Image 1 (cartoon, rainbow, N blue to C red):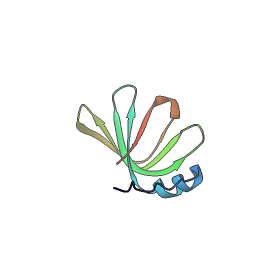
Image 2 (image 1 turned 90 degrees about the horizontal axis):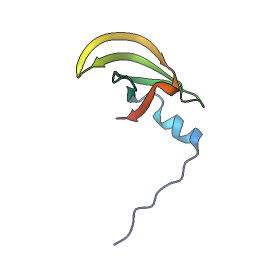
Image 3 (image 1 turned 90 degrees about the vertical axis):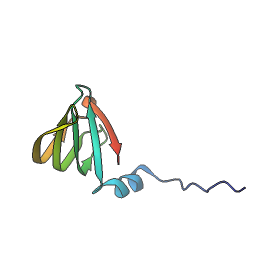
Image 4 (image 1 turned 120 degrees about the horizontal axis):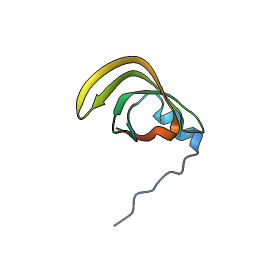
Length: 78
């Protein structure tokens, strides 16, 4: 059986693919933010659009734009 061929991508190519996609950001405090990834920098600072704040599985707030410092959480791609 043949193994699937994986394409190697540069970080720039990867970012071009994920910008504009839905993401989940889990903060160290346990709060989750879901939104559309609009920007990600070298320090893993994250800018989101159409952001929702979730606490204990419940929607708490909706924001147009949000900025999350890179040292506050973990980014997951949906």
